[in-house]
Image 1: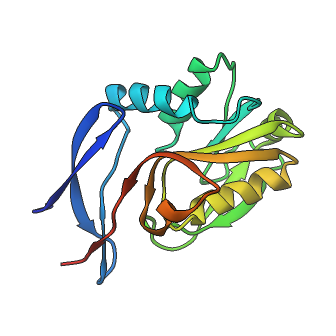
Image 2: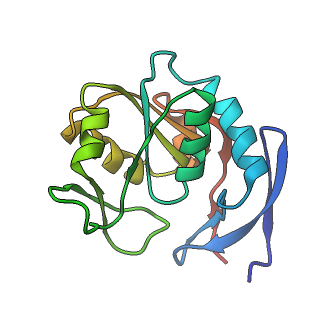
Length: 183
């Protein structure tokens, strides 16, 4: 159980995030939007104001980006958005696959799309969406997958930029999230 917390202020919401060790030297503030409808709705509303106007479709990875992408798609009047899955499902006949490594996931994982998702983003102005961009590893894997599918990647957006990602000028985000020393 976390003994320290970081107070996050974003899109009119205040949340106490537990500070959790992810390595012997690094700790992060645990940001989870799953199940938080107020946070999801308010951050999506603010984020859609900052994205490219010519966005045709949104793409995210399982799991925490899903409610954000769903709410953003609803606000933008989109009928669909695309989710890169983290494992191959039985309905995926010819999955498109890339490897992914994230600071919040132990070991390597995969991201994959089925044929119908590839068809949805092929040659479309695609915005990549996630809850947090930190090292950029997950977003880079998502971009690689979208590129393999033939998408025109027009931007990358997240609720929060963490650590060095705050200094990037190729992403759109609402607030910064510091990294911490592990205890």
